[in-house]
Length: 452
Figure 1 (tube, helix red, strand yellow):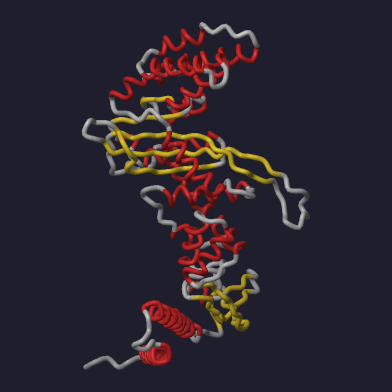
Figure 2 (cartoon, helix red, strand yellow):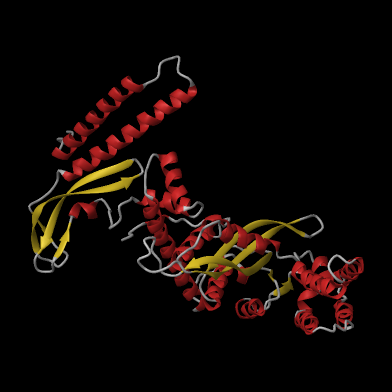
């Protein structure tokens, strides 16, 4: 014998019937005739879909609003009474939804709450998880005002630029906190090994400057605008495709990390990213950099045993400065000298390069300092400049991927005309961009939940 329908079943059936009736009327009113173009059909279908989505959402929530009691239990365990109704507006993927909720107040712990908020999974924010995800994706790619107009154009949902900034910063900050937690676990040896076993793994990093500002308000109540530049350390861990001759060619996969924090914080973040990319299981690890001392200090600490290569083009720039200072800008003799030195550099003849630089006897103090610093640079990095050997093994000898990373992850979003950032805002945005632009994108949805 079939079970007797309950009150809840009857309410559900009534809601379905009501929604179907509204859908039928919408279709009758707005369905295009046989003369409509595809654009007109597309527009009509979109309007009908949005209206019906709003009706379904509103109907399901209203059904939940109707179930309320005069008393409920507070978190402190005391029985509390209903103090009335209060409306709340939430921006959803289908538009603005107004929720009428019963409010309860506990005189013992002075806590006011709406049980329906918990039932619907609402936190202290004014948007749903899906809308926040859209915000995070757009804010990582576009200026906040442009993200606002783009969101409205693509989805019909409006969120102000200031709200987009506030929510994207909260999401990016939450993401950065997770990165830091993972870095702490990695440093403690508690991060599990990934399944991947790369053949050759490249790791590179550099710094790029971002326009920052001190505490400031548009109404000038916090004083004059004071801008400065802060260095954003940016790293990439990547694998390449290999041609038939065993030479590394284009990038196959890449993972990014960026932070405006100190090197002491950047190192563990990069080390964790490398670990997650299979650093400890790779057959070979190659570290590439521009020759700055901090880069090799970090490499020694985080990637002991890795092959270290100074970017060939940075080394060539050092020789180019010597050629210009020694022979004059654009001098044919200087160009000939530079070409010969680059050939020697690329064929493991660094001793000849150093000998030629040392044979220069400049008269001015500035040029003497240049000669000394150039010799010191090449002497300190001799083992990292065995370019013929590196090329024969198929390695990349340039840091083009690293430079492209700085531009792609940081500059294209944070260093545009007229921009200046609070450091915490910039930090959140580079965290979002690094996660979005990596080959294996991070699922941002968990970081879009439970925002205050």
